[in-house]
Image 1 (spheres, helix red, strand yellow):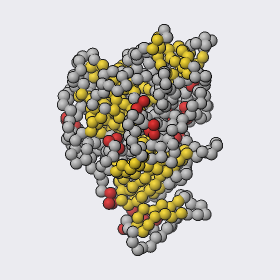
Image 2 (cartoon, one colour):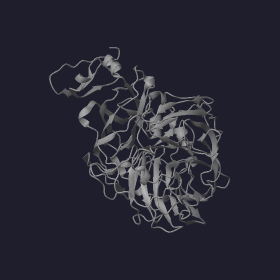
Image 3 (cartoon, helix red, strand yellow):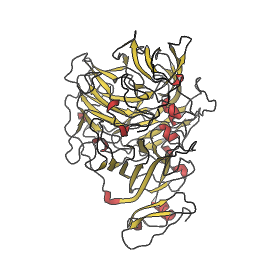
Image 4 (spheres, helix red, strand yellow):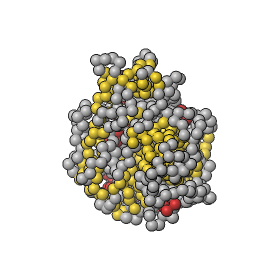
Length: 630
């Protein structure tokens, strides 16, 4: 995998190891991991705010190693315990969050309503006076009407209030909310705008009573993010002072957040106290560009020993368990890419009060084809994770605390959950192919594209008939991994061609995997799939509910790469979901006729002087083509 090895300037240092008096020491896990407070509704009243945040409140970072342009290892002093300008969400009238946002709790079958007031102002460290401070709030993973999706078509300016309202028709799951402002998603997420949403059903969910559900007692959100900071050289060449800002020039989207520091809920070197019982961890990779290989072990530095068995109970959408049997999935580590959520149970009952376990940073185990450009690099030969890897051997520590007494303690790990079942793929209505590509031309307007096109707010790329199933094939034609995300739907992967292993020590063969013989992390309902270099993923999804009676770009949902700099650099297209009447009128063909036609590809779209048709008829018939004007 080709990676950029160009030396970094002094203001975008890759910081590697903590030292004290020149000696390498174990990471000091001292910062309490913040747990966002909960908000419920309806209505839910939020403010989008400026704030300042301290990423290292206990001052655990006092010096670093830096690799200079000559590849010399240089010791530099510096602190991370200074306030940094950030963005955050807070419930109206509260100030508890200085980074990220409160955890929203929704109930299945309810109608949610919101008053979200935007108070964003220009940060004092912004170098560009023309930064817009409009924002959006996107409900990542939610099936909702397009006008409330919170995509780039729904910005609201500073000083105004957005008032979405919609029914919660999705099943039990963990989703998240974040901005989706066109061209500035990376910037706003990197500065802190992100939060967890727990969708629950306390009445009808048969698994609810037997799974940990006491928030901040045995049920914890774990938001993993990478971060970069700007350092400024002082008069003393051997010392650095933290400038109170992150790398924040929106014109350099690729550098936003692309740093060596990895945060858990907004702090480095964190420690979270947990009861000696079964604990639920709701993981979100809220990073702008990095994937992480994560495990839990009793040692913070050992490469291969002491890993705990963890039980996966949910993926992006809904519970997950093995098809047919309902046996739970277990693992000793997992790969999570930007935008993905996964829920795991960990049994801490065999550990004593005060004992620690560690959420391990297994960057060395990320498969080569799974590493994202500008994300996790190969390990350095002698000094650990070379740029642009992540710092340290562990992200955080768990500390057993016998004084924590959940209201509903769970002492037994489940062996069965809701069996995973595939949708009826005989009902597929449309086949679509999406090619993930890089424009290699110098100074290309759109460096990252899908099917040769970059995002155009005024162009609709696909029109979908409501209440139908489609099969999408996502082909990665680049030497870089891309986490592909689609709005509105949760899909099911049915086939994957490529390297699907998760361990560099046991590399998988490049081959085709088909349901139900897919890797564990591809099973379950998902809205993000990491399509690795030169690989192809095929999924099916139903596009149910909330149709439009017009076909216009403003009604579009997005699909895009969830490496946010790629999304902002145009690797995003949009589709609309419409009623049968509108669909038939626009395309001039009945649904019954369409179902008798095999998969076809028309390209390019929009067409110029030439239009290419590829496919086959499954029987005798007539093929008619109409433009959107009939």
